[in-house]
Image (cartoon, rainbow, N blue to C red):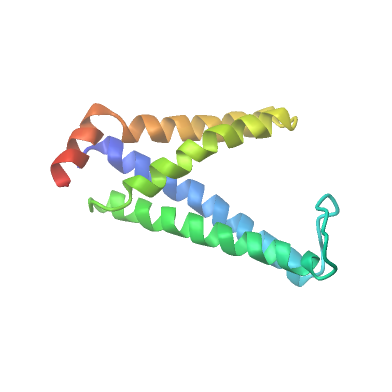
Amino acid sequence: MPNTVRWGGIIGIVQSCIGILYAGILIFRELTGRHDASIVYEAEDANTWVGFGTAVFFIIVFGTVLAGGINMIRGRKWGRGPIVMLNIILLPIAYTIFTAGQPVWAVLVGLSAIACLAMLFHARSVHWAANIY
């Protein structure tokens, strides 16, 4: 397995840990009764479920990517797809973060996505993935 695949998996694992940590923060906020005032709810009881629902979504998405990253650094064939998909999605998210007035975070998110995609689409990584399938 080339080092580019290993590093792509490591970047995916780090990104996933951050996403799962954020899900934990959302759950903590919901359990302590803190809600985001910027979210507009149409139903009275929706306020309770938005944070939990977002947290569950993050756990599913980032948990899948985490499992893929762990598989990749172990040299197994499954995991490249979820990591590539996440990082393709992170590129427009980085732009959105930038337009929201957070250029430092936007650059960090964008560079991590570009670095991960560069690792996973490197010629050695593509050759490894083609041979393993």
